Amino acid sequence: MEEKEVVSKNFIEQIIEKDLEEGKYETICTRFPPEPNGYLHIGHAKSILLNYGLAQKYNGKFNLRFDDTNPTKEKVEFVESIEEDVRWLGADWEDRLYFASDYFPQMYEAAVKLIKKGKAFVCDLSAEEIRQYRGTLTEPGKNSPYRDRSVEENLDLFERMKNGEFEDGTKVLRAKIDMASPNINMRDPVIYRVAHMEHHNTGNTWCIYPMYDFAHPIEDAIEGVTHSICTLEFEDHRPLYDWVVRELEYPHPPKQIEFAKLYLTNVVTGKRYIKKLVEEGIVDGWDDPRLVSIAALRRRGFTPESIKMFVDLCGVSKANSSVDYAMLEYCIREDLKLKRPRVMAVLDPLKLVIDNYPEGQTEELEAPNNMENEALGTRMLPFGKELYIEREDFMVEPPKKYKRLYPGNEVRLMNAYFVTCTGYEADDEGNVTVVHCTYDPATKGGNAPDGRKVKGTIHWVSAQDHVKAQVRLYENIIDEEKGVYNEDGSLNLNPNSLTVVENCCLERSLKDARAYDSFQFVRNGFFCVDARDSREDALVFNRIVSLKSSFKLPAK
Image (cartoon, rainbow, N blue to C red; front, top):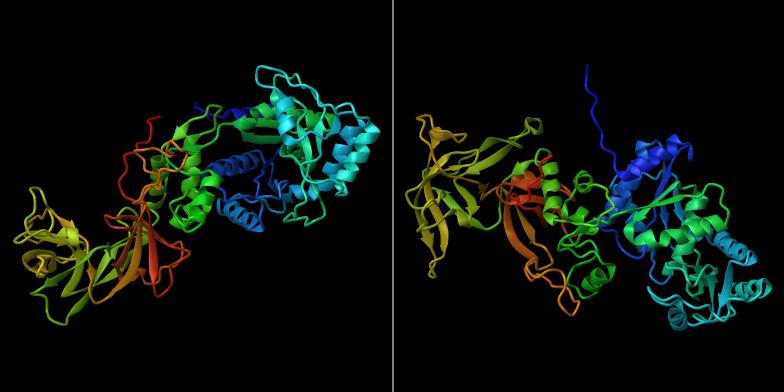
């Protein structure tokens, strides 16, 4: 008898399956509801993939909805970038794209309904006075002196707020709940404010805007969202969410479920900090490859598959925790190592002359594109008398156990021949400018017919037939030893987060590389063609990740 595989379900899946079994919902609908006030980051990727994945697993629906109720910070630029990010991650919203601002008329009518029920009132207290009246975690608040206005007066004032008769900050609409509630969110929260601002979607149609805690449950209810999945900081807001949908008498109220955010160690995700880095020119935009915005990860060369692997490894739980950035790097290595060609690139070129190689002769040597994946095929490498090798692959006086080139030593040129160093040239300051060697024609392909072994293998490119490129080497933008923030709250930046290397020599096969194409540069790491700055006649490569990692996948 075959044993059935036990499938572990996270707590959200357990809730959904119970709801479906009990017939609370015929099908499920989830949503990803970003506010378009900045670029998405790696934490948002978890929410996107979680909500879309649940909809797929249970044959439900998935909405992309912009929570655009705050015109002070929202831009069309952010709307477009978010759509691109969600699409890139593979979350398909089909024809289910929505904007909260499209529901402003319904939200206004919902507020009127609450006023008529005696559940909302217009308040003239200033923002500071509202804070003072709210109370503390240990002391109850006190009622606003405007709380007992009549329904007729509240309806009149609210309509006049909508008609633009009052200045910003002079009046708000508040829910009438309980100023003695132990949950401060339930102490007559503000649900509408006056704001004479142009909205990216509705223009100047409105001069009052709903607050997030009021608008969000209405949006979910209108769209038929069944499970409103959000992060833990909204757990204390859930009673208000439920109050709104209950008082507005929606027939199939959505259910809010909270899960733990995705925290990465030593990275910057706060929009305020990223905005400052962009404005001060420390990074070259929201998609600078040193950031962990989804746009930045895409530009650096991360793949949707690697992000999904990372999110799956992190799991879904109720407990907040931090994940080491090294785990994200592990995922991109795992995704790319069998998919991408392994090519030769010399970042710090030093000329190597093979003195006994026939003058003027060149040949084409066949090399595998990926030793671990034969399906990627082979390519031809141009080989001749003059090559470039990495400067660090030659030393005049090497330390013990140095296995590369030095006078008298024999090494293997990868996919080519054995060569023996016979000498070198240096400039007046003693810097080596040319290395001389001889080659053994019988070792073509990298093996000696007499069975002799060499301890070192180095990579190379043809000096006559190669591609020049700029290569950018990235480290964490944060000084990992000192942590993210200084005592004054400023960012603890790593001054060596970007190293630009000019005039690198890459093998000929890379001449047709285009934006987002990625490769493994032998011994140097995985690299991607920069989508913004690279041109056909001036290639730019970003290092995605180095080859080695200290991260180990936990044992099952």
